[in-house]
Length: 364
Image (cartoon, rainbow, N blue to C red; front, side, top):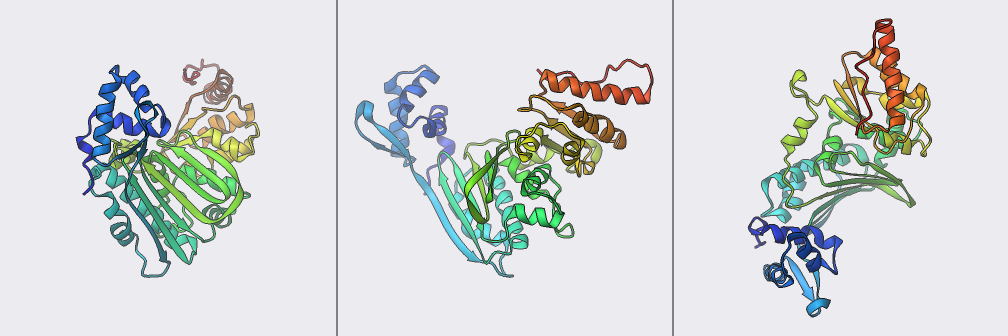
């Protein structure tokens, strides 16, 4: 029977959370954090070893600790018409998560069933892999197929120029190549629920931390056929699926999925880090965003934008869709000036000579 993590003290939870980052000095680091002696920390470490959550090797100050894998599963299943995502969850994932907090299990269930269903319906793969590892520091789940590849599939089905553009569309939400059977919400919400989320397909890797505010796009040296989706979450995570759903809903729209968060720096990465200056770049960012009622444009990591880029978003798009609220965040002074300029031009069209007191200032 797995040890109940809910019985651990705050110090023991801290040790488990920080051990991967401090494998050689966890006792010192924990002592400094809580202001307690090394002997007191040693008692907590011994308890974690006794309960089977950690291993220990070496003596005294050379002592090192490792994290025990509490449960694991590596299942490879033939992809056929009998394959069902709820059965895969029940037979190959849920048994490894016994004793995990209900909110974390709910998140894992949502992510696994959504990603597996996408693979069944879209990948064209001959087999499906589901790999699970449960440790007291982290739950890690991978869903792997050997099909067409998610980025290539979106590129071809949506008529896009590049697989990087497919990644940008994927992060917006409400993207599906089969609207009769899918809403396009699964990957969007899954990426916001897990502490770490990533997709590897072909030579492209896209990953983010929870909240979808720090997307990272990388080129890999060796192509990976098919698609691998990586899901990681701490067993101690406190958030719930409902909190994530509610965050991207608005009361005015009956709490439906009506708010999205766009990381503008990702658009720049998808352009091989070219500066965001043109109207075509702006239109690529804003494509399909008329499906939402609120669009948060996060400019973190973007040092500057061109006047045409700003104008096409904050005047042209805003005039065409006055019912959509555009909220820019994390702007440098340079970016904020361009945004204010676009807002001022829009206000000037609506009311000649009126002072613009509605344009956003730089986010501090």
